[in-house]
Image (cartoon, rainbow, N blue to C red):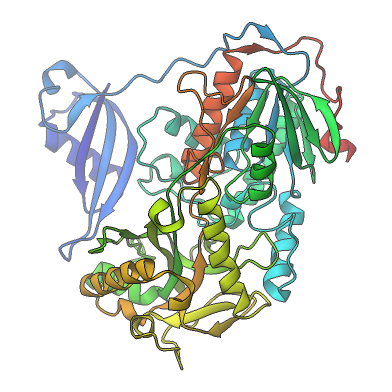
Length: 535
């Protein structure tokens, strides 16, 4: 089987693709036995539209084509994972956090007979959506059930992007798992796959039910509070004030569980600060983005809604870039702690919202906040408190990008904000340091040169949770911090997005299974924790 890239067509029907493939390789009738699409993408540059395909094909006499440009052997699918652990578990492994890392770690453990216990401080996705919607409409925050905490993690309220630069074989396995639990088949071939926040709910419920069917347990409104480590080995965990024995724990807390991270550090779990990003969300009408990116094809239904990615470097050495761009999306209230204002972006599956939005971020490091362990976290939280103090009721500060450059509070906005529970006009320069403002100013000026009209966008503050300010160091081979503790995902400092978090969670689960063997006597519903059905 050969993998052929850069197969170009103007249409998407199979006959056109097959014709382009045969022409590219000079194939004759009978040479092409079978083919399938591996990836598809679209190029709308140069005032033209071209579809580009990567094809896996079974071709007669394939070896003679291997010297051709864009042709290589199709990689073999990796062998199914088989646990090699020999240390017997006397209690089930525990997964703390049920976002992408924890969810897929727990699913992988369950599928291999380990019957994990999942601890999630928030609520089920059905209840969580009601809590988030209530917050957006009223400004009344539930600190335990919101955009950051609850089943599905922060990724459940996002555009649902599944893109990653990783070439890890687990990428394809992840996409197959998502498809098996209800995601559209398009994610298997799209170069920029996405699910949408509304479509995620049924997928999350399907994964939850599969874990339960396989004997796993899921405890909602159950917060990991402390761990007990003796002789560098995990002995027990405290959940909702109750201590229970624990041999193996996957820490998949998410990047906003700062209270838990501080308690774990007090318990002896080593941590280190790491660089992260701060900034805003910027919104434009989706029609403007379509015209700016697609030009003559701004009405082509195959291409809209259009996306963009922009990067720049300031003269003070800071990188500025757009991140998690949400076509046809919404800026949403994403606070998790009282008195702190955080925003994020979200799209539904149809991406039919009137505006496009993207994070507009600046890199920050110890030069900005100091070398102390929690200095970055405190810096992050201080910006969020400043943003909250402007309204004291979770209305978000907004400003036209052009006015931000001059330090002028906007009188009017060219782009109506989508943020609920409301906005107030403010000068966003007051939220950031001079260094960060300088970098954002230069980034915006660069983006205006690249996309004329960009400065008419509305900036909404603040976006501070694009990644964690802390990392829990782990051994490269065993993936453990202390013996029995497996840090994973965004909150532990090892991922940035749904796919990378989920893959990191699976790898930690498999490291656990290569060390520990499931105890035969562990039965579904037994042990110190109740099953979800008993709640």
